[in-house]
Length: 414
Image (cartoon, rainbow, N blue to C red; front, top):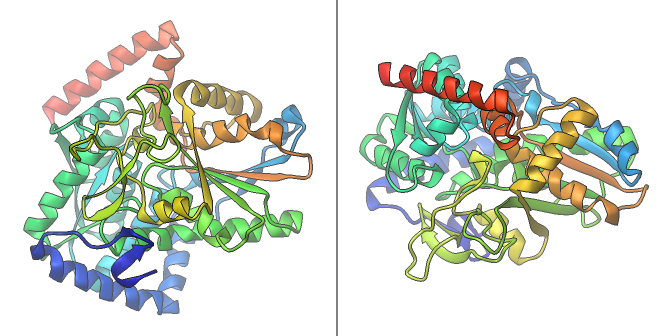
């Protein structure tokens, strides 16, 4: 890592001057905890006791038999408390808040998993929480909104822009500027200004550390390929980090291909080569932007992947070609979702299914000696309405309409 959080030409600190003191404070505390083994021990113990770590590395025997190519394993982050990898990061930042002496936490959320995890963390530690969520995501992920509120968090629907993740981040940053004396911004992905990319990757590295130990104990060797979906980049960096120096392991990040490369209905910055280098939201990376530098609206069937930027760490790994980036379309994702459901009895999040979809597409290139690991970063309970709608199940579609009407009425009343 270069000075002030640059990874090659990506990253850095591009913030209003008023935030300099709080960022410098955060950098100093983070540097201290990295050198403090007792902090990591406290962190891992907390996750073991509260979230159920280590999560299993599940052999997908039926899928392996179906394709008769490489062995397929799934890293089961869906079995975490809250149903996704997001809990790893927020519990680490919760401990960090104690050292900072902050009593209020704010966060952005797309699919809602980070929002729920932050609300859980706030309840556990006794902090006040405010969650910003794009109105588009509020409507399609209202079950998560419900749980955030019940956990005691204030949920603020963001109506600016496209009403998605990037707009929620903008609102959270505005809040932070006005309240940083008491408030910590618990960024949910490995993006944003330094030290957030490194810090989030640090807390999520527990995924890759476990995988390396688990696969070595089980197969007495390292995997051939590791697939992970990529929105901002936290789950991908979490599983990739421990293998970056293992040149025999191919690392594949999978973005949201949406309706395809020949449309504007996607969120692929690297695989479709549509991202342009720029500065926004405190850091430099590849963004989906127009000729005037304005950020484009994004699209994905998975709310957690429709972000216009990508982690500066991943941008650097893309430039150096250490990580290969691909995209999976909505159609491929739905097919892969159904395949995992029917063959293994596992319900994956739509975000995670992007990684699975690409692994399935490329399985023909594998041999029986290959070991393939897919990071199943979350579970699909939250996606039930979107999935039922996508599969056009008439009974479910009618049920969804009634449920959506109910949730909207609850939202208005609250």
